[in-house]
Image (cartoon, rainbow, N blue to C red; front, top):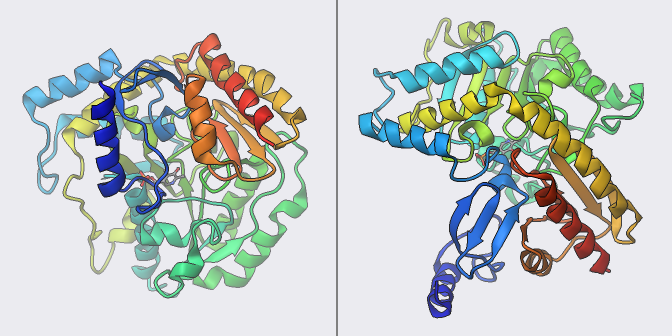
Length: 430
Ligand SMILES: *Cc1c(COP(=O)(O)O)cnc(C)c1O
């Protein structure tokens, strides 16, 4: 594309279009994309970037995938969408069957939602209704560890980290939930019994008013990219059983192999009562999410009055999204991801470790196909991004976190390009 056209486009964009988590009046620079294929994002200005972010955890099989393209194209020949009220279809039935099959045992009911945040709203609403329908309306709060992230809608916001989530701005409109300290024992370190003590005490003191514990299993993602010990999650399950709370696991970021297990819950060998899925569900093609729950939760929600679950997005069960999700899950079920993610993990451990010696770096952590370099002070996103683009990679840091979660199909040299770019950029960073 010629330079003037790009400039005109970007100027319009800057003056009229909101982008995620930026200012409308002083926005961060944007780059125009014209094509994406495999692990590459092609910019209008001609650069070809190795993608380190999988478009926020979604494009696990890479871009422009022939099987996924085919699924979308074929489904459009039949129909793209029909309302889900009173109608159903094969793509949705196949998808829900597979999800029930591959998720931890006991999750037998599926609510198809249209985004991760909505699936969290649905999960929280189910938990509230579950208790209300059993005459336990006083169980209407949620407990969650700090440093969590569960989405940007209001109920989801109320269980995001209160500092990162800017709760002080919204105190009058946000439900007040109960926050426990975030888990401290790292994934691969010796479990420390003290780590669960505060959560246990809070649950002990508040269980009469608690509907559920909501947590991201094993990896706290956008709230700090923290990777914690599986025993913590095991104990969450135990505490929920002991004190009569539902356990909601938000696997929206961790689901579908990212942490080295198909679902992060498997690291702790637990099943939640309610589970949220999203992000990689459609292999990065379009928005779709799901809230799965146990038979007990479904029965509890729908017994007595009002007898229904009052939620039903217009685009619920969108057939195009279900069709492409089915194609993505087929690729997952072929099983190559296991070796791919294990290899990425090994290489991330080797290649990112040297960053630890850099003066600007506070910590390096890796699990599955997730690599995190935490810096001592916040990075200048616009500046470092410019340097990354110059080096031919797409990485989008936030705050003190420079992290990558590449498509599973990334090759060794391509991944090397990402890790070298991080090392170089942070070496130059004072
Ligand atoms: C991204 C994310 C969400 C929100 O999903 P959206 O599709 O952006 O609404 C919720 N929970 C977790 C853990 C996430 O990573």
